[in-house]
Amino acid sequence: MGTRILLSSAVANTQVLDWQRTTMKITHRMLQSVAAAGRLKAIPAIRRLLPLAAIWLAACAQLPAQLEAPVLHEAGVAAANPMAVDAGLEILAAGGNAADAAVAVQSMLGLVEPQSSGLGGGGFLLYFDAATKRITAFDGRETAPAAASPGMFLDENGAPLSYRDAVLSGRSTGVPGAIAMLGAVHARHGALSWQRLFEPAILAAESGFPVPQRLARFANSNFPQAAEPDVRALFSGNDGGPVQAGERLTNAVYAATLRQVATRGPRALLEPPISDAIIARTHGEPRPGTLSARDFTAYQPGIGDPLCGPFLVYVVCVPPPPSSGVSLLQLLAILDRTDIALRGPGDPQAWFLFAEASRLMYADRDRYVADPAFIDVPVAGLLDPDYIALRASLIGATAGPAPAPGSPAPIQRGTDATIEATGTSHFIVVDAAGNVASMTTTVESLFGSGRAVGGFMLNNQLTDFSYRPVIDGLPVANAVAGGKRPRSSMAPVIVLDREGNLVAALGSPGGTAILGYNAKTLVGLLGWKLTLQQAIDLPNMIARGDEFFGEASKLSPKVVAGLATRGITIKPGRGEESGLHGVVLHADGHSEGAADPRREGVWKTLPSE
Image 1 (cartoon, rainbow, N blue to C red):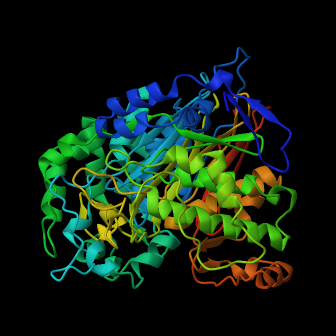
Image 2 (cartoon, rainbow, N blue to C red):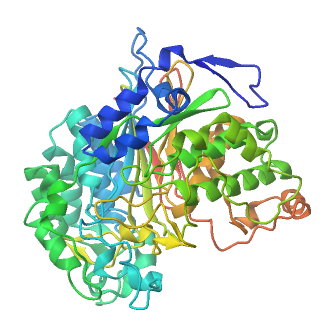
């Protein structure tokens, strides 16, 4: 195959990309990134990456900088709450860049959207440096305590705990990584002082803010965390009951925590007294956890290259495992073997192809993707063109039974038993220089574990592991292990053209549906040439196993009837809670941002002087 890849799309099936400029010893760079992140157990797996993987996966994001006159871009922010957007814009207006604004956005989201993300959670971030045209992938995924056992989510009889019991237990919380990760981003790319970035959220926490509709909705919901004492204490209204939309809420304890983080630096959450408080809270009943001081001391965010692959005439980049970004690339590659780009949103066959390709992707993801520091993830095999062609050939004229996982490598894995929730958020920042941050951030379930410390919610990320470590006699890739990071569906995206220029950045919350949400938007934007807002607004449809869920009422009667003749009936009730945010950068410097109308997000640009 050499250093050339033939794009397999029906739209671009005659175009060949010359990747010689992009094969920059990626295997060695990946080894260096892993070593720098202290993830030495991943090295044997990475050494087995084929030369194909070096071409297909990462180096395409690292094209050399072009000697061009700099273009001033329209700076802007898209996030799940207007106050978070305004916090990011304030930092940009003060001379900050995309790295600085990302810290401000996250700290404000932890105040106004605490049911979805915060200081006590984790995330993944892709950062595009406009000067060098390089993308860096940052991994802030939480880690399991060293004392975690494979069966810690099994009851006394060896049966899996209920999701509720697992989430509300002290065992569900991992070492939080979001702020440590953002500290790494700021150290490499930030322009303003670390302390300055927290001022908007501190002011809002102390002076109060109007309770958003979404926060009030979940504080008054029947989700089990909403009834927990810590949630009630933080989000009680004037009458002592749960807060109502529009009420003014303060969180002085959160402001005090932010002051500690601002003053002491990004590792303040990983050191006493905050780390001691987190440990103590997770050691409480029911089912106390095993987090210890050494788990916090050992935590380091991952820093390295993204995984990238071609889709149509573009290059799509995502974080490597334990993110499921590799699965998003696989889904796009399968679709590239079809004529979906020649169709459109009103064509039933387009949605059929999307559904069937999604089912194939999820079957492989659920079996093979996990933390590569502990498990050999067959990244190269999953994206091998011959394997992609084999998987695409399974798409027939009608939908059959749930597809089985394929065999991208000679690995025996058990069927996965992971349950993923949707307490997540995504935001985008672009600055005037054209630097872009694309971050997906989460506490996992709504209000995380229902336990709080320092005015913020603790994550329940460890319930993203498979509760059963062995199924049908075979080990499960995403089983619990001490120090391991649970597999994540989070997959922030950056899209480049063939010259390495940034085309778009986007992402979404939604648990396992994230991959479907992102892929739908990319097909609409890049394949069907819709505007970004139109692509985000497309109906959501999630096809996994034998289930087809989504926004059935938004599909046209023609599409619904056409899918029915192909054996697919879309059921409502799940797959509607995307929170897509993104931006398209145009050559003239215009930033075309968009926010998902399904949540409270907005896109705003920095006012011109």
